[in-house]
Length: 360
Ligand code: WQD
Image (cartoon, rainbow, N blue to C red; front, side, top):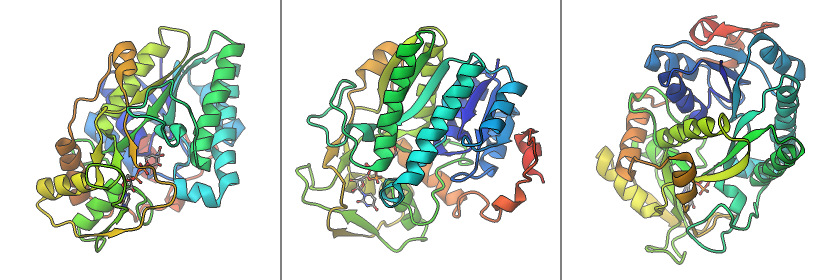
């Protein structure tokens, strides 16, 4: 029976679709393409040699979400769809609460209506806010410090209430640390809109010559070289973590949170140096003030995912940088930017195989 992947055209969603298809799952994607490109789905099919259904649907459109469940006997849901820019969430919080929280509530109501109660939810380490100690365990105090992070924290609470009200639900909350890298084919990867907020896409755009230089936000943190330390995790390791969590929700009821990180922290300057080495490109940078809201150090204790999901990250920082660079080098402008939203036919019932759907 098929797995529904909401936000399946996004960075982590598309990489997870590759692993699901390679594992033999039937995959159905639901995406509104607000923050993703349909081209990613065509490339997922190219990489795997498999096909999947794609629905151009917004989670806030309840009737269309119901249509997806009406037309497919969905077994489980992996829920990525959501807005995720910290800075943007501070300026338009209501947009984030409406999109992320209401969208998730509608999804869960429709799942309940169709008796689908296996859910893997894309949460984030940002729910920890400023950690009181590192490495961070799942029972650490939660305290998101921005609207984006608060949507993730609130959704986790909503899902705990759902699981408490109906023990037949089975839910995994996956708290990602810092996903970077790309599939080794170089055909799918991170494709941020506009100026990248995150470190790795910015570094790779400097390397390709699209950005002049990197601004290093602060070098006066209490860390090895004064710059911020994070737990970078290869997006393919992260995707595989979703398959382990899917197996878990298909076998055991209840709700659990898991940190998906490597357990190793790297500083900004270590990332710059590693990327320079693997790409052979200079990465000019300037040291500037701290970015407001940033924390000094954040990395996971990944023991619970190892013990309960039989999962751990396998790819190291050089591999992450190599794969990021290959994606950027072969896709200097990300996915085909010429492919704009009006190319997507807004059929009443836009059921198409990904490749077919987008050959409009
Ligand atoms: C990493 C380090 C910056 C850009 C964010 C979200 C989090 C999650 C992952 C969704 C920090 C420094 C960055 C730059 C820099 N996303 N930096 N110059 O802030 O740890 O986490 O992305 O779940 O929710 O908060 O990631 O990549 O923005 O920053 O010096 O141009 O790189 O100060 O130390 P962050 P990041």
